[in-house]
Image (cartoon, rainbow, N blue to C red):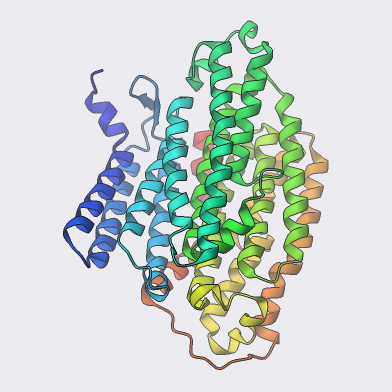
Length: 474
């Protein structure tokens, strides 16, 4: 196989971030205490990859014999993953030092995970999709257990690995059945298959098994069992990274697999996706009410938000797909900011993350409390924050597709979620502090939190900054 210049340039965002990860790994091998150098290399590499993502944005083609998408959709997600990775790295430096796990391998794993995410969003073939998922997942398994001396972290990594491997089996078998019925794994060619191929029973069964594998990655009910324990046991910054970057990558694959080929041949999956969305919204929000640990609360919140985003896919409307992309951007800023505040306030060994521990924060650290309040309001869907706009577009797409019952359910469950989101704000401003312990906000973490807060306000006031771009993609 001969690689052309256009192939290399088209995939330059992925290549550059992979090369950055290898350079960081090399620095680690020659410098005993090179964590800060590796952090700097990672940040520089992310900005270089961002440059290539912007440079390829206007392209609308494929590379490597139709295996990889170039420009447009792929570049949009590349920029999203790189931004999530950058904010995660800025949050992580002080948190890792506090937990005494500040090792350079952490940044290498984050970079390789970003490369896997970018492969998923750029996949024009089910094989490259699988490679991207596995690259990302293997990094997540290790990152979840990065606190090697913590039993909960070890448990989180083991649970995630075992259930993830199980879900991978479904995904691979589904790909095999799709290939057996169509003779190809290329999504662009599957979309042009004649009715004789798509009417075969194993075609639908194959997509059903792929659906199971992807539903596990987005944490949709009933494939959500791993989420609360994994998020609670993982390092807090890793939980934030998984809940934003990992979820966005899985939804980028969801849109490619189910919005392109299935929309043209088979509408049976619309009802299944609607049921998954409804179950995720109901279970995520009801179980979120009972949580006292904020990491577990945000884990169930993540399940609920997967349900909101599945509405956009179930609708089969371009408005729904545009709404998912906007929601993923706003959710990335919001959830990463919320986990970031937790990482700043959290003490060693996962302490100081219950509701009671946030009592009086509005007096002790007013800026931190204001930022967390903004993140909670955005997760609830209260204007003028970005979460409101995202939910509006997703619910509107459900109404357009005659799934009004799903939109109503989304509004009702959002009202339920207000209880446990606003409860955090009540504790911060209307409860007296149980301690007067000084809270130090690390500089890099503060920069990350401010960027996240600014992002949800800007997108809430000027949603067209993202929506105008998404309209070009669908």
